Length: 315
Image 1 (cartoon, rainbow, N blue to C red):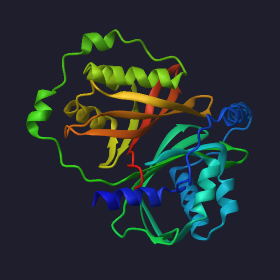
Image 2: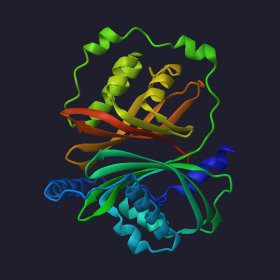
Image 3: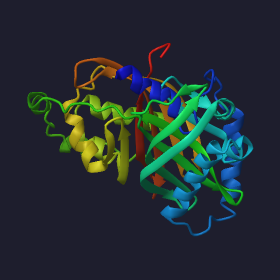
Image 4: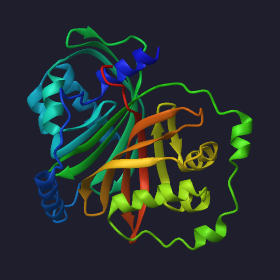
């Protein structure tokens, strides 16, 4: 079953998976995006609703179903990046790989939309689909959690980021494990943590993990926006659910690496990185993670997080 689920992850990333990962730091694309974001401030986004963002996401899937690769490419920003189980991909790799897809059916459901600001949003949803990729059938029992970050630019929505995570049911931790890691009295420590006012999202992300390592759950909660949501293979969590669930894990051996940053607009950036550690089941794991950071009133907060298990080589 694990192999099937990982295969589903390889086959069903909404923007698909490229034949080889990119090593580019997207320097030129990021610079172009910064210029575009500045230009964007002069042309405010129109009034939009959650339904508008959802309709745009459905339209992207429709371009794949009808194999309109030109239209699909036009829906992605130049600096677009995708997190998949086997690698982090850029726009060129993503566009090349969707041409291998023969998607006969795709059911998108359970949509959630989180507003970043007036010209950017995150949409989260689940997908089950039928068809083939490179002639190989998509597993019938596959299910994926997807997220896309969109920015209003040049009179239309463009995707700047996408991530897919296979649905992998995980049994809840044993009661004894949760009890042994119960939150410590951390209010005093948390009160000493200054507001995050830097736009260096890599540094901000490391501060979150430092709070987790010292079991300072209050400080961790203070880093999160009130409307924060989190996506794992087990589902989608609210801020309250995220804070409640972390005490079952010992984060002391977690190591982050391979950081990349994707600017969304003047008040939002995405941190992408790899994390290794030991899970509540006492098994070592490697995961690709992303966090959307937003500037709200001069304070940078984590608005969205998603984790995707890394697929073993050859899967």
